[in-house]
Image 1 (cartoon, helix red, strand yellow):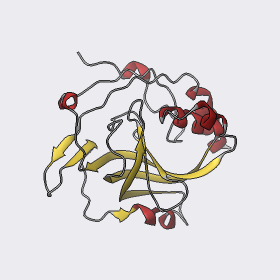
Image 2: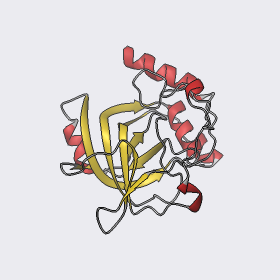
Image 3: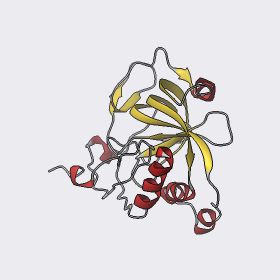
Image 4: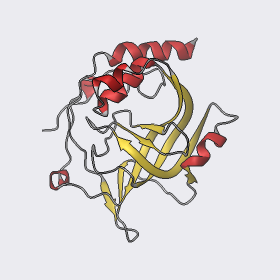
Length: 202
């Protein structure tokens, strides 16, 4: 019942979502031959598990604190507040930032990523799927074709590493975002970020 309420809140709040585009610069570490950019909290990847192993880890648990590595399928093209990662299944894993930090909106598809956060298996309702499809700039026909809930794996991320990303010149600065959001992408029953707390830096 509690989970149903969370998704009801999510569905209602998505209707008022209004993204504004912009990428937040990450912290680059040239610790290997390929630069690793960290977004959010930096973390150790030494004991990371493969993204494909996540379903097995959640087979007997509702949630788990994990560090995973895998390949990015796509990132949110409107704000960079989520991305998807290949886990070797038909549906990729969703990674949500909670609007606490942002990944690049373009240039990340196919790159290696590391993610630290809380992993869950959950149901995405139709409204949530359509919102995410809009973020991917999918066509009206593709969005209209979404008519059923689907089960996905997701991570509420504390930090994300993207390996080999080539930042654009304007990303040398730390871009702010003013999304006007008050919704619950990650399904924890709380708004991801209060709009009044998420203002353009001076």
